[in-house]
Length: 385
Image 1 (tube, helix red, strand yellow):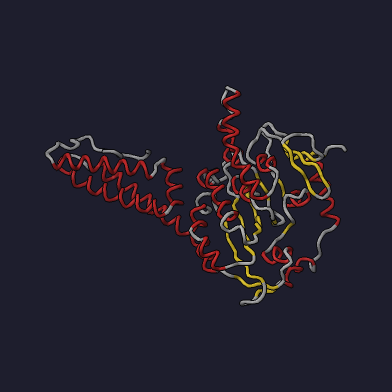
Image 2 (cartoon, helix red, strand yellow):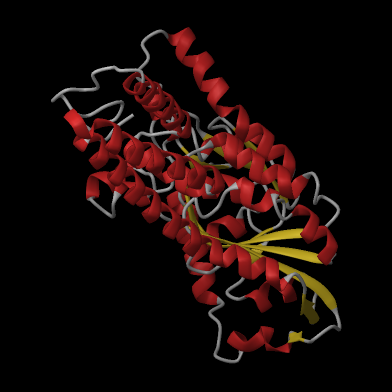
């Protein structure tokens, strides 16, 4: 069978879509789905909107496992909209502040998936991708049932670019395999081929698929009927149409009702609405915590600069108080801690060491030490950790 490139295949799919264009009447096909107070299927909505590892993080979902079990949903719908890239091309183009791009924390991704696929495994689940890019795409593929909005994409990331410059081939290969092992874990949760998920994170690994009946079997080579990734710095970026045609998604859905109808549900009621609301509010809450944390950090640095001469002990105590408040806040808000770490290169562990240093200096002053003289600064006179 002659092989098809993704570009040729895309053209064929677009022709098919044009041939079966929807009419205005078709757009309301899901209006037959009815939401009730308590009749029908019990549905829980899990919004995953925003940035990976801050808005979307495993601690948040882990803390709600018992409450989700109590809600006892018949179906969990994960609504995923996370498209702010950490992508070299978008960085070069200047599309947005780099801190707003998704980071790639493999450990956090696996832990998020574990929450839904281990303690919550008894509850049927689907993921509806409104759009995704980078680490959120890999996470989305850890669900076996996936729907996509018409204009959604499954964009890749350049996870492995940090070790591609290692000259020693054996060392580079070992590090690559270590860094990619998480994609195998996520693939196993969904019952997908490992090669599919790996292709979205490793630019040097190709991806092709071969049809076996109605299913597509994916492999990390160029021997399949359909080539989605040539390898060598090419990464897959799949539209909803392509994802559905090759069996990565179950189909397109432009609303929650579309998803429900695709699952054969016409009557439903929502459960765990307090959980849904709390997850939505999380994005606002952690950003407020982050701004408070930055103020504490700035104030602490300022006090450190003023801690000189006769005022050394006075301002060291003020600096100490700010850092203790900051540590308490960051331990409460892991999302704020993540952003502080990315932006200021400061961790809770570093802050705790600075606290120890300040306490030691205050003890020396109490016992008659000279203090800092005119030098200022202390354990943290300026930014950075």
